[in-house]
Image (cartoon, rainbow over all chains, first blue to last red; front, top):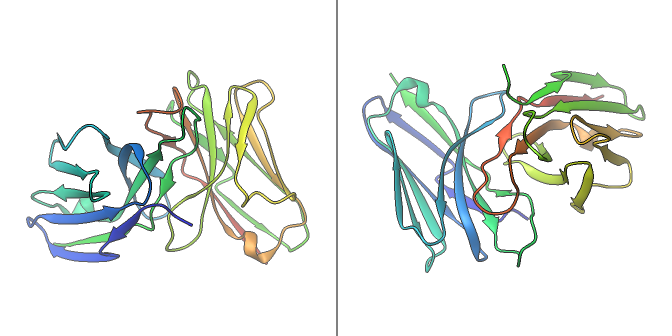
Length: 114
Length: 115
């Protein structure tokens, strides 16, 4: 089963508006990462937030992490048509020193209307 | 382009045939991962390598699947006796280090269709 669950599954907004996506997860983590995937392509890493961080910014992206609620949010400000893509959260679970693959959610499909 | 490359981009095969995919990671990356992604889902972890050693396999990786990374550089993923349920996008990713705080760099995937 997949660790992270994004919400909403799909989101359609007008260009220039802000887009917010949420992610919930189940187990303790080392870090949480957000990725973007354009149709038919591989995933592109956007931002990583460590378990001891609460907020992080990168350009028009803002990510928050609440480890007590096991949740994260990704905010894209001033959206552009090129932001149309699927967005996935991925968790790096704490595994006592073992190195496992990231666990991805099902994604939020974001459509920016021009 | 020094990103992760995968070959082929698309593969159509008949049920029961064997297929092999190749992944060339970013050259200085010592970790290599294989994921599978079906339509509308996120990537599911299959296996990963630290240099040439295969360190973990998901239970999704049945005995029809085998992966190798013979010299710690490129990797191959073979599926024997393909089934229609194997139809998916197979993604390869690499990272400089494993464990904490290492983002993955993905290739564009190999889309497999089993007819």
